[in-house]
Structures are given as structure tokens and as C-alpha cells.
Amino acid sequence: MWAGELMCMNSAKMFGTETVRVRPVNCYGPGEHYTPYRGFIPKFIYHALFDKPYVVYKGHKRIIDYVEDSCRTWANIVDNFIPGEVYNVGGRREWESAIEVYSDSVLKAVEKDDSIVTYKEAEPFTTNVKQMDFSKAVRDLKHNPKVTPEDGIRRSVEWMKSIYHKEV
Image 1 (spheres, rainbow, N blue to C red):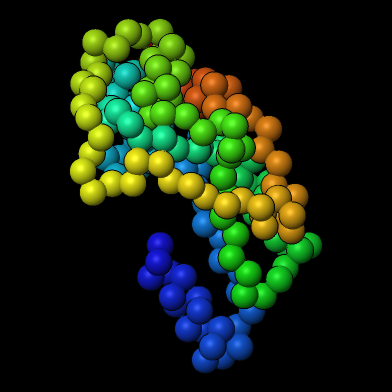
Image 2: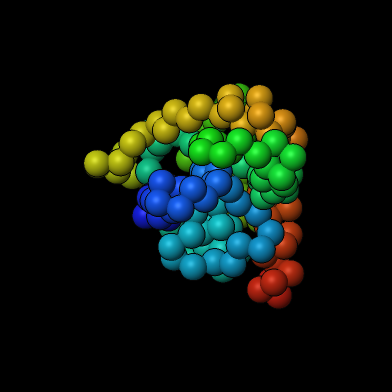
């Protein structure tokens, strides 16, 4: 992602290109097919649907943002374009949770227990809690996430079930 931002910044400096940089923070939801390189929500859902084991690292906290909320905010850039601005777009601060809590929500949505989950202590060399400032997106782009993590995860599970033809 940083390489893409550098290219935008370079274009703005060299050619006067008007750009806005947007940093989606743990955006998830329908349309995100499973690969091992995706965020933790689609990985957890896919593994839970197919009874595949997965690891949850304790001590990590994240904020997630449902794709519908993120896209609504990105669409607002058209009417609120400020060249050179950088926006972090993510969920509500009060929705920040431990990754174990998100895993539990996924398991609840797929009606499974945690027997496929291995819990490990915090991963070394990884930020345990990523603090993000969304105030500019709220102020300039009217960012106002509405879909709670529980509802977003439920919707994502339903979408993945339909895509992978999985009845649970």
C-alpha cells in the first residue's frame, strides 16, 4: 500500500496531479473471497465454514469497518475533494475489540464452537493495538459507520455461504 501512496505523491509533485490518499482500515464484507492473504475476518469465516483450524493471537485489538460503510465514505470524496489530503477510514472507536472477540462472533454466526481455534500468545514484532485517527474522514467525508461488527460478520458469513455453496 505504501508503494501506491508513494506513486501518488510522486505524480502530484512531478505533474501536479490532484490526489487524495485513502487508507481503509480492516475493511471486510461481501465480495471478499478467501485467500490466505486476506484480512483476518474472511480467513476466520472461511476456516470456520469448512472446519479448518486457524490461529487466534491473544492480546491483539483491531477496529473493523464493513464494506458498505467504507464505500459510502469513499463516495463522499467526489463532493469533498481536498487535493493532497490523507484519510484513514475505519469503524467506530467503541467497536474496537480483541481479535478473540471477532473470532467468537464468527463462530457464533456459523454456529460452531472454538474447537478449530488454536489460541496463542501475542505474535512477536506485531503491533498489539493499532490506534487510528479517523477524525478527518468523519469531518470531511461524513464517515459514519452504521453496521456493527456483529451484523457485518453475520452478513459476511451469509455471503460466503452462498458463494461457497455451504450449508451449516
